[in-house]
Every structure is written in structure tokens, then in C-alpha cells.
Amino acid sequence: MQEELKEFGLTENEIKIYLALLKLGTSNPAEIAEKTGFSRSYVYDALERLLEKEMVSSVLKNNKKHYVATDPKRLQQLAEQRLEKIQKIIPALEDLQKVSKEEIKVELHRGTYVYKTLLRDITSVLKNNDEVLIFGIDDETLIKLDPHYHTHLNIYFNILKKKNIKEKVIVKRGAKILKEAKTTSYRYLSKESIGNTAFEVYDDKVAIFLWGKPNHLILIENKEVADSYRKQFEMLWNMAKS
Image (cartoon, rainbow, N blue to C red; front, side):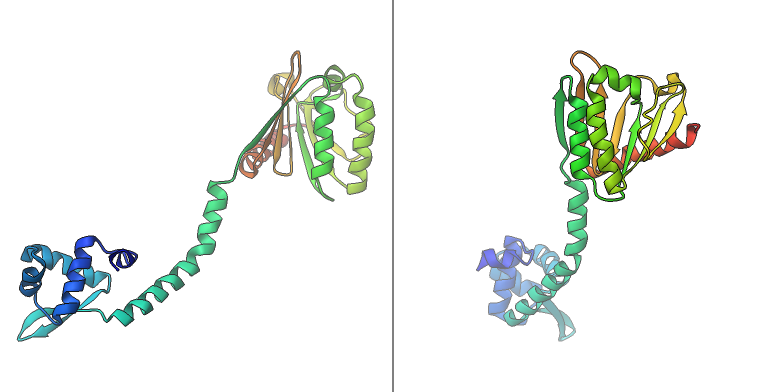
């Protein structure tokens, strides 16, 4: 019984006072103190807390404050009221959980054909009318990355065309661009502004390239991370020249 009463947010001593009050009926703090063995001051403070928790009520008797334990049947009503309040806030709590506990998935790929791996993922994930944002990857870069990239790109561009997927690409000024990319818009920044950074953003994913021997592709899947990179890209896009 005491364990069940704890579900109403009561401490062990508050439960003892509530149960004593049920047995005594209407009582003053002195009578409750005598019954429970607690000091009168402690009983008075505990009764005030029980009032806030709606476990007791107070009445005046001979101009003195007395207390009455809440009818046990009323506890069911209190429980139902609390359940209703909890049910109302559950959607908001679930939204918070989605934001705070969204998992960050990270994959690491390396080797000559990491770009082929990325293209395969992009075409499998994106839906009609989606968008791909590309920073720092041009024709010259792809030749170094994958000697057979033209074969992969022909398949990729055909899928982009069928799904009406648009690309926005920022490359260094003077870079070779992919003429066959009819769904792509290009803008240019200085070589210094581009640096050695290269990334792509699509769906809830970010692909980051690290050039070297071997080449590395870091694939991050997380909406918050992807949205952050989108904002960064759009800022650079507005700075770039067409």
C-alpha cells in the first residue's frame, strides 16, 4: 500500500501522516504528532505539503485549524486527472525526444571508388524534385578521384533527369565543369575560398571528402548536421559568382 501511495509523489513520512489521519479522522497537528511520533513542527510542515498534493484538506474547528485525509476514492480521480495532463503533453515530449535523441550515423569509406559509392547512395535515397548541394568538387578533381568517373556519372545524370533532381555546385574559379550536367547550376569562388574542403549535402546526409592515398569518404546521416551544412552552403552560394 505504501509503495502505491508513493506514486502520488508522497514521501514515506507523508504516507505515515496520511494513513494516521485516515484512522484519526479530523485532527489537529498535535493529535497527529502524538499518533505518529513526529514533532508538531514537522507534522505541520508535512501537512502543508500534503495540502499542495491534494492528499488532505483543512477545516476550522473551534477556531483552530484541523485536517482531514482525502477520501481514498478521491485518489482515483486525482490519478485520472494527472493521467489526462500527462497525455496532453506527451506529443510535445515526443517531439523533444526526436530532436535530442536523433542518432548520428557515420560511415567511413576509402579507396579509388568512393565517389561511385556516394553516387549510388544519392540516387537510391533522393526522391523526385529533391536537391543536391556540392562544394569543391569539379571535373579535374573527379579525374584524380576516379579514373572511370565518366561511366558512373552518365548513369547518375540519367537518374537525376528522370527524377528531376537539381544540383547546385560551387567550384573554384577557372575549374573544369561537367558539360553533360544539364540539371546543374554552377557558381564560382576563388581558389583560396574553396581550399581543400569538399562536401555534398542531400536528404539528411552530408558527404565529406578527404583527398589522399587512399581517398576517404565520411558519410554522416543526421538531419541537424545536414541542415547546418545546408545553411553554410547557402551562405557561400550567395557569396559566389555565376
